[in-house]
Image 1 (cartoon, rainbow, N blue to C red):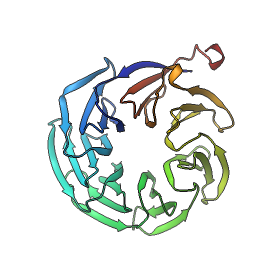
Image 2: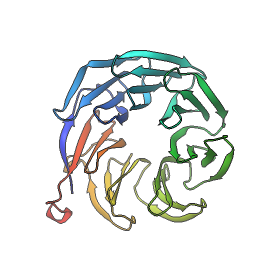
Image 3: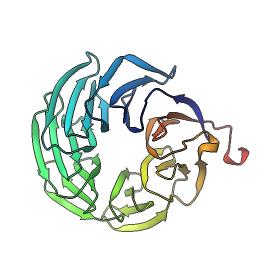
Image 4: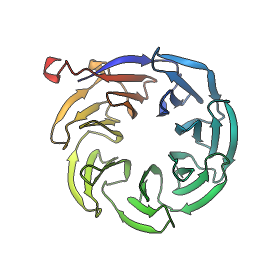
Length: 297
């Protein structure tokens, strides 16, 4: 059973995005600040604060970088050690909704509100590729081997080759688009969640195997923790699922120390710890206590 261990307060607006780089948790908020947190002591790192002209719906940290995508189309690359801005661009003037770091190819992949997919070099910000997909919001970008999965609002999930960017496949697992996508390598399955509040399990041929009514409203978060999966939703709840999604092993609401407004995402910290964040301006760090079961609560 997961229990709330630390509640991080400091943002003055809804928290839109969070990213863990192995040492720090970076967060962006409607208050137009990006900051980072020390999860050991629950304190904000005052030496790293980025004041933005416009809020950021998405950020991604890792490999000594923090990349920030703002609502006005500004995209920033920051060196997290020197705390210097390495580059800044505004290609399309649209809000960024998803970022992904591909360390193998030294790429930052970014998706915006109008379906523009951009690939940039991490250090320089030089544009490598632009695909105008005209697919509405790109909510998630997932790299698995030599494939790139792009989750769109209007035309489902598109699968591209990372070698030549040929489109390999497309399918629509969720109605109204998929917000989250997770590759379950152990079963060779793809799990998605979206505005239709369903989790959808598809096989490696992109055929839908199962649709699970998982929440009452939009699903914004999906991670794997050992043999369990965790989802988060606009309906203010976090759910812990067993390995095949046949059972909810724990439901976390406000009365359990959870959020009282939309849960906008969840981030895996380690094999037994994750963080959730939402419109209530809170970041909650959850840790698994193997000595406590759901029936004990």
